[in-house]
Image (cartoon, rainbow, N blue to C red):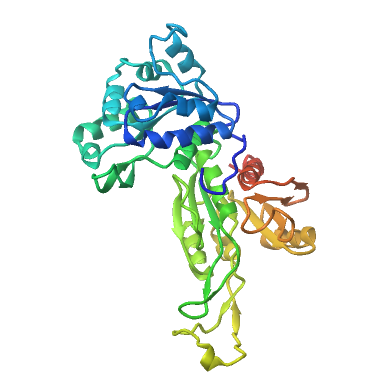
Length: 413
């Protein structure tokens, strides 16, 4: 998984049965990490390798990270109907990497190895992650095969990405998605599509307000909470836009990533998407003030002396700027980071800004606030009611927030 992400069983992977099909491509080495991460998240894996896959990665590698035997032989001593049992028990099937040859065989409905027979027998969602040379991917027959998988068979095609290919093949489209992306695709296949057909708008991260070309006023927000919310909303089927200030994190899969720098840029990006939003979550740590007159050149200490004064002016409030644009049924969730009087400050903000929910946390509480993967929050509801959650990973907090937002939505949508 991405560096720093929590490895603990949780929704929607916990207790679910996942078939991981591995075919004979160089990208097969990445799927050991996929197997490890899915197992850590609580999924029970059946890893099925084609004969070609075993030339790249040994079955024992998967057994070492899943604790379960890998499957390679259609005519196994474990029973002639092995493919039926595995296919019947599956909650979803992920084929990664899916080579050009496998894509062709799957599109034709072939059943000449254990993996293709499982595909014919299963009724679970199937995810195919193509991985091949860019020229093979660009071949009309490969494109036609992938289109057939999607439009006729209803498979989900995840990727491919674009980037460095196998040694000596340069860069281009055809690269298999990274393990953390594939894990999220599996999560989307397993999750209830509560937000299918709904537009979700989320703000995340800090803003940077320029003082001069090299300095800025900002805060320590990493964007982790907003990213966790975006991933969770996408897994539930939402069409998600994430308006993010500067962050070292990668864009979540399937999400529209809108990179901004300042509070003014964030307001504009949110305004452009607000009218179509069904759910808006304001998780960004927007700077309240900005330098009134940013310098065009670097401010030098030798010129400014021992004291340097900066006049600040207030930034617009993102949620209040776009509030008139929101539809009558739009659900809104705010965040409140406080250092004292948490309940009082959050309650006042909830009332003044007209949110349906507000998520409050203490910046000084151990394991909460900025630059950590966990959070301890208090959720206040418009009209009364509050819930204090224990220390959880930010991914778990995101799920809890969405559950409560959906309860509000159930009364409006």
